[in-house]
Length: 419
Ligand code: NAD
Image (tube, rainbow, N blue to C red):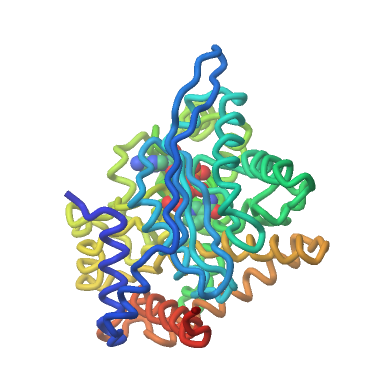
């Protein structure tokens, strides 16, 4: 059985801690969670009955700033998963140098099984439960799997009305009309593109590279579209329901527009794509230059890592690679650009949204994208200069973890302990 994402996150932390010779007290502190808030709450359904749901919000470490992280609606949410994702957020914010700590939240629910009204009831009740622990200076949620700008608007409204005035800074990833940032919706996928361009700059760039993408949502869908537009060839694509392959390249832009308008990838393929349908597992082992797992965690394991044929993996999802698979990739000389760098575009533009909200400013999309590129490129260069690609004895993941842990440790040390 593959390691859980919490086991993976802790194994990665301890490997980096060993290499940094971290003291036991620092290890204990950095693997503890400041707040773990678990709630069970009722929601009225359309037929007048009510159902009880479970929700969780975790703060990992807030030494570098307010807690920041998404809220996930998914039937498989567990407290351990949310803890792991909160910890990854601490490292991610540190890697890109935005002044946040790490948080994550989730509700055990399949949002597709609820009507819009039920989804709104659930969101508003969960937000009411979170009111004591979230806030623009405390903990700022954002979208993640199964949540979106509309849900952020409901969270913002519920939190605001419980205080009696409008507080847009309590969430990021809001609709633009409510103080959302230009470019936030595309930020994670765009960050992936910028990191890839930086990584491939010396080797001729993205044009003509073949790419396999697992996941066609906010991260995978946007990234596939942008990589397609940048001249890469998306040959393999899959979501929860269908996986497709076209050696001549899939028009990811057309597919993304179609799915964003409410259609399914399967329908798009039937009507327009006409790509060959393949098994879901074949996306991960496709014969391509670049593999982008952008769906969910622990999909690259010791079961399939030997079969991966891409020489470059960029982690769009959080925690898609188990430590066992990571060791296999290292032995096989496959480069992995780690999640805490690769998908940090989302938290970076969330930071821009938070800053714009506090300053009552609205940046243009060009400005947002230019600042995003600057931050992603800088973070990539800091990590790759700490561990040159092809260099012996280190990986980009290790270098990213070293830098993140050192930055959090520095903040802890400078602050000291109170009382
Ligand atoms: P999403 O809900 O928008 O999309 C998820 C996609 O993955 C969907 O196309 C779904 O069908 C597909 N999928 C789910 N399980 C699958 C499986 N087993 N096999 C194949 N496809 C599967 O979610 P998202 O926001 O794109 O998030 C995807 C990942 O990226 C998650 O790990 C999330 O934590 C991470 N992430 C998201 C953001 C963000 O800004 N949205 C930022 C950083 C990291």
